[in-house]
Length: 121
View (cartoon, rainbow, N blue to C red):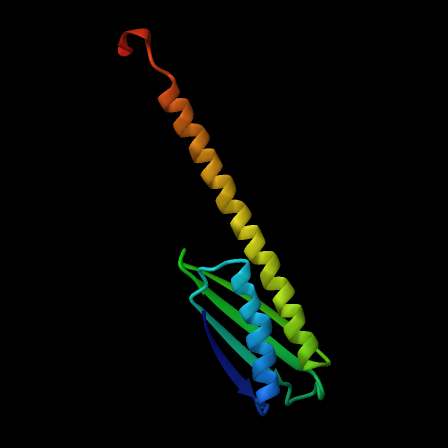
């Protein structure tokens, strides 16, 4: 998985980059087919002084984009919150895929299980 990190109104330190790599890279454990993770870290520059925003977009091969955003008083807390949100979305998507596959398997079994006696030899 490729992780692109962008900082807005914020200096990206090595510690922050490593933390993002660790947390967002952990999502590959749940879903190996993530192509690109685009991470934007921002410190608010307007009326909300001291708030940090983390936004992550994950590109997956099924033409989906999983997206999560969080605003917290601490940048590390925002990253943790986004990781949890994305993990829940991945688990939901995988559950839907399993359900679809099982429904298809049940249907195929019922179609091929029904045969008139004269088809058998």
